[in-house]
Length: 106
Image 1 (cartoon, one colour):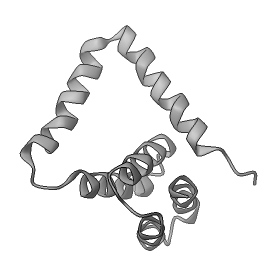
Image 2 (cartoon, rainbow, N blue to C red):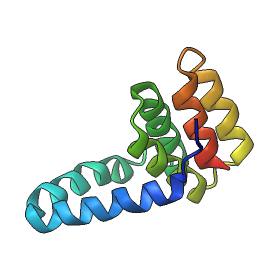
Image 3 (cartoon, helix red, strand yellow):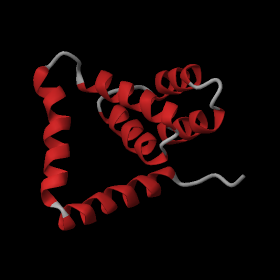
Image 4 (cartoon, rainbow, N blue to C red):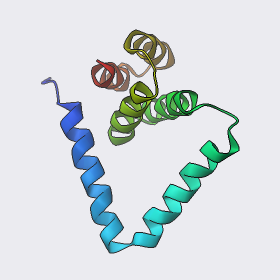
């Protein structure tokens, strides 16, 4: 199985969301508002929220969300080795999605 370039995949996904925003700006605005509500509540820091979102994405095998949340977790200070270990522990039965998260975190 060939290794995919997950950074390119993430950029394509973000561009696709931009296209959806052109078609339905209120839908994207609503999603952004909902996503931002967690940050405003300040119960969890940004890194923790992103690591939880990454774990959910891995468990759902959602490649797009894995790439986005792995990059965001890294941006907010998650260390590569920490993210790799947690991804592997969370997904022992789902090794393919776990490998995706490890590749993005690298």
